[in-house]
Image (cartoon, rainbow over all chains, first blue to last red; front, side, top):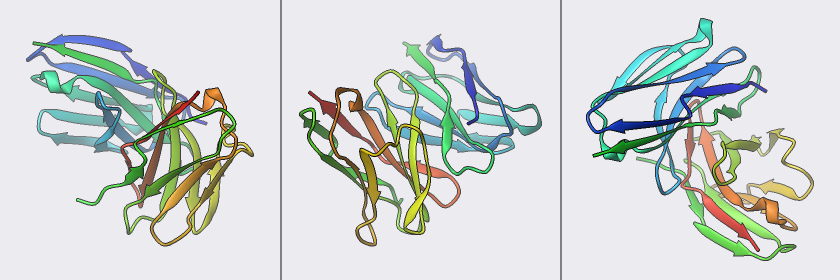
Length: 109
Length: 110
């Protein structure tokens, strides 16, 4: 299956700071999604972004499918943004998602 | 907003026992999935289900696992003889295009 690398693995931010999280893929990007896993373990859908750029409030995401990467931008971070952020993509010819190892974000007040 | 639901939220079982994890996918979705996440690790695919049959499965999904859609709304994962290493969070998901995940069942095997 597709290999998904996320960076950085850990990130500590002061409240109000901005950050960029990155996903690199070993193969063609299909149906890329970003998730936030909250402290209770729930996977919250952030973006479905197979290509292009989308924005939702303080969050935005960009996928450059031809170069096999995606970026998640968090602006003016808040303590509630803490958690683990995962990106995931389908492999070629498959419906299931392959997940990255995640970026653990800690926002301190 | 429609959501995927899962029961129970937490299940404790003894090694060797059978467990059934239950999911209600979003009603107009066509594809259903089970994933698991061992504590501190990434989410791993187990199996996908479409048109009342398994469409894909991973190496993890061996003979001790089975899935079923017993009626028009439920989707279940059965683990026949649990092992310590089956302890994990199990997520159900459903999709038309974008996958939506349930809140998970935390399975603890003692």
